[in-house]
Image 1 (tube, rainbow, N blue to C red):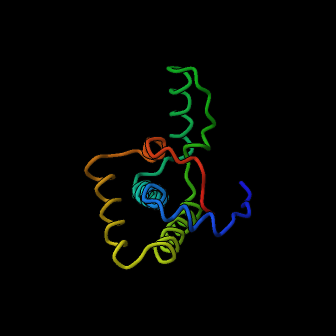
Image 2: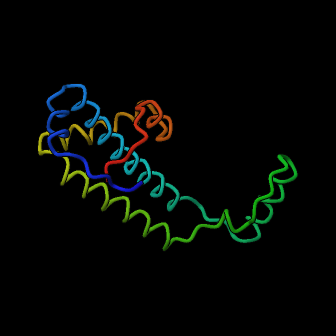
Amino acid sequence: MEKENIDPKLVLALMEREICRRALLMHMLMQGYEHFVSIHMLKQSMKARKFTYEEAERFADVLERHTGIKVAPERFIRNEDEDANELLEHYTELERMRNSQLSDTMRPIHDGFNRYLHHNLHVDVTHATRLCGLPWKLS
C-alpha cells in the first residue's frame, strides 16, 4: 500500500480524540506482537530436529496418501541461514518500532502485553489482528 499525503492538521485533530489514540495504540501493540510471535516461532523451529531429505519425502508421501494434499519434500526442509536472517529482521524491526514509536514508560507495558497474550492466552497473530480490526498499516 502506498503512503498517502495526509494533512497534518487532520492527524492532530484526530489525535485529540481518545478513540483515535486508543486505536493507534492498539495498532502499534499488534504490530509489535506480530514480530514477537515470529521471533518466538523461529527460535523454536531452529531448536527443533531437522528433516533429512529422505524423511521429508516420506512425510510428503504420507501426507498425500492420507489427505490428498501434494506437497514438495523441499517445503519441509528449513535453511538455517534463511531462518537466522528472518529472525534478525523481525528482531531489528521490533526494536526499531519500540524505540521510535513507544515511550520509555510504554516499552515495559508493550513487552508485558506481548508475553501475556502469547504465553498465558496463546493468542494467534492472525486471530489477534482480525480481532483488532485494523487492516491498514502505518509504514
